[in-house]
Length: 63
Image (cartoon, rainbow, N blue to C red; front, side):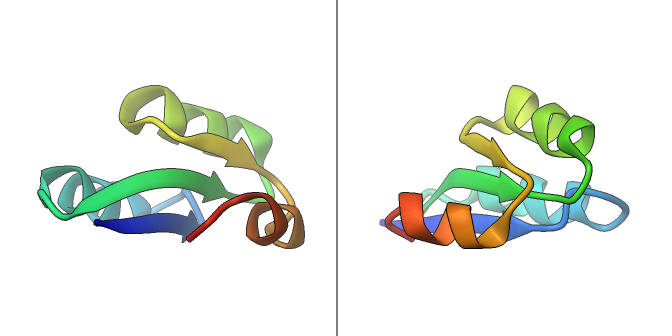
C-alpha cells in the first residue's frame, strides 16, 4: 500500500484525488494547501488529514 500526501488542492487536484481514490494500492493520508478551506474540502470528500504547512505534513505523516 502506498500512503499518499497530496500537495495542492486546487484545479487539477480533483483529478489526482479521483485517481488516488480509485487505486486499490493507494491510500490518501494527507492533503496540503495554502488554503485551509481547499485542503479541508479535499479531505472531507476523500479522507485524510488537512494541512497548510508541508513541513508539518511531512513530519507528522508516514508517506
